[in-house]
Image (cartoon, rainbow, N blue to C red; front, side, top):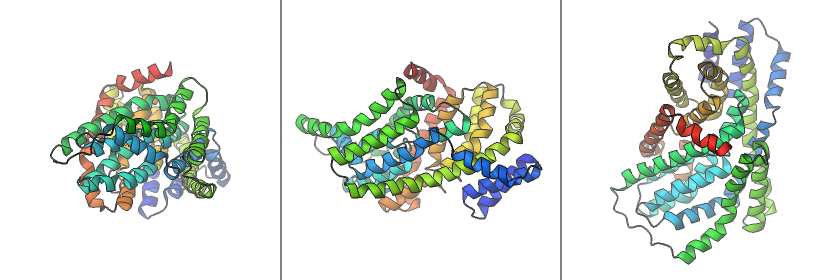
Length: 426
């Protein structure tokens, strides 16, 4: 009965068009009434405590770093560098997209920000070179979702806070799986582009490559600073977010000089608007999270999954299938906030490392950003590149299929996640 009330109130509120943050609050209140615990003061206290978290301070600073990266010329330099390195290969613009997305992922941590920047810069270039517009938009969409997996990742921050899991360990564990996704996309692009008989642009001279590298090295230093700082304990993930924002601002204003003082306010405003949405979601989710714990929903879910508890692989596959289904209808942040307090206790009871599960969970949620009908990244790419939703869905499916295969392999072989993570942690 408790699970029915939880799902019924949440899905019912969403079905009538209520914003998800309010739906989460309504869900929490419904559970409180069912448990005969309703007290408006408890709702208010949990709402305030939900946003009162030091790790969550990373969110606005990573958002700001992403805004500055797109406005201040860092994204453009990364694309230019990728073009100089692999643009001359057959189908080179596709590899440029994947390489640029992987590097940009280590700067912003936001799939939506990367999708907007990549679609603006690369879809017109790919179409002008003769590539299919739908396929180009699909590749940009699939490449952009590497951002929530390679650190700094806003998704890992939210999952770490909601599940009480080390954000630093999550960051380090996400590096190799993110690279695997990029390699998988390269293979998929090679397969779909080999039918195209397009002449690639000429190879850049060594002098040109070195000049572009010299100009782009300031942008490339940011992921190095963050990863080295986290590995050696120089700063926490929250402090890394501040470093990213300040460093990006310094490079954009003082080095590249593409961002004036007047441009800082719109960047701050954009980051603040996005942050306010995320933080209200997190705060509202803590009300539901507290009631989920009080009502012992994780225990009920564990009982339902009891036949699979003895086999970690089957349990993970079942949970991943659940997240894939939910990801088609719900955005990434609310999915993380709703499912984390339910699934993490189940994983712990089954002996599954919550860091390992977190990596699979965030990859799965990231793929949800390119699955219709919600597909936030698909909507961004459609708007920026002037492609219909039907067209971008047609273009993205071969790349999404490869990413699902990578997720399946990571589920079957946990060492692909945990061995590199252990090496990076030491």
